[in-house]
Picture 1 (tube, rainbow, N blue to C red):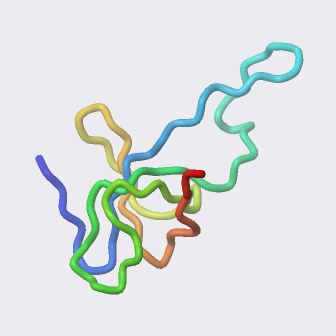
Picture 2: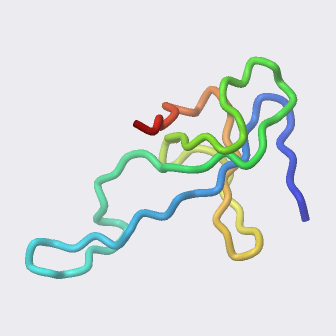
Amino acid sequence: MKLQPLGGRVLLKVIESEKKKSPGGIVLPDSAKTEKALRGTVLAVGSDEKVEVKKGDVVLVPRYGGTELEQDQERLLIVKASDILAVVKKK
């Protein structure tokens, strides 16, 4: 199944963060993480010309924004282009 977002929406593949450990070596659960934003790779962009990201960009989106789904064992997220907080640029 191939997904194509409509209008001003963007399809992202969520980049999972590595397991966090406390200074004592205890693995912290996801609920204890303090990150407020998710990082994702843009897989597809809707047909709206005002969308400023392109396929392959790495972006930051709010943790609880968008619609989450799973396809082929991958965590995907469909968000409005206006919900994208930033594009992560490589040095």
